[in-house]
Length: 419
Image (tube, rainbow, N blue to C red; front, top):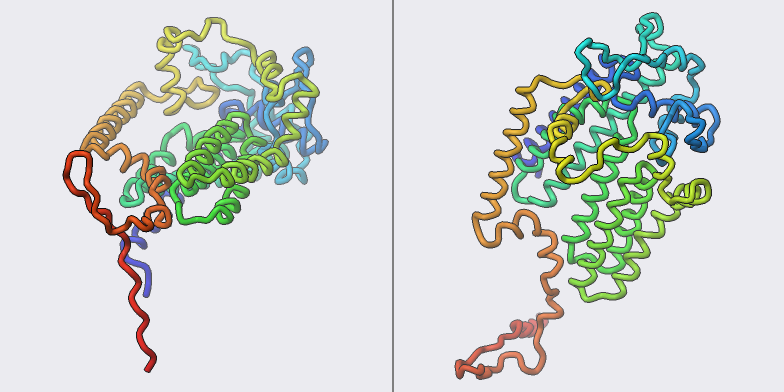
């Protein structure tokens, strides 16, 4: 029998969302001039350095390279991009990446001088070549990574709310068509690899938390695969290390629900070892070179610190710029959308929040049904632990004098005589 019509419709809708996102991302990648996407003018030099030397730069705040603070980022995204473009002669990078000395990066100035670089139409016209070709190839790769991130958002939503396909499709659509996400997906930026890796890791964690029928051995295979994903994420961006904390929680919850110290210890090791083998060398390198596992001490020295302390009052005053940066502030965060667009998107977010709260309050179990179905299945006792022994079937008085009946599973049926 073929798959139900509802499943075909769901797959078709998901395919349309992914195809539309890829098309939108490619449009962004082609239309936005090279190095005019946020921090692309720092990310791409890392790609070029690795492609030229197959080595990593050593950060020096007193002698900053063209990659600036991005040289302190984990290298996986840059290494993949370097492998894709290493055959291209990019010796013209300094010409194609001629920095505009008059731009105020991050500020939409009244004079309209918002270009991060001085553009050379002869270099940037199609057919692309040299550095411009390399940038566009990495951008195309990033669009595909963004599509993978959208897909895993769909999988996560389907895992959290398995009974409503519309939730998964809506989550994928919101992810795909958030303007800033589509814009960054069409740029050279290591976030483009971190997002799908974290989405995949979260999906795997939800499946681990919710699948109580897996034996410890079956779960260990999933923990090992999860550890590989965690390692790849940690080798892409340090913020992906937060997934390790979530993993520790899931291992503890799952092992606690099964009352299994064996799964707690082996599951934790199975997830941690691949992660350490894949990414540990990078953090040890940072410790050796900079005295800091993450290398963020040198990162902040190069990037610079805030002129105003980031207390809660100051962060609240900056909320509008945070929201604009989330929804869509293009170029070097100096090409904002119209103000009505932010008002509309913020309003829709408030409506969605109200809808979520109403959904959770609809019944006493709403919170668990929406957000904790996987955890609830984990703590459901296994059948082998619910069987009673010699007391089964006996009636016993309670302290209040009311008799309670303890039942046992029905006895096995006698075997039928052979004929």
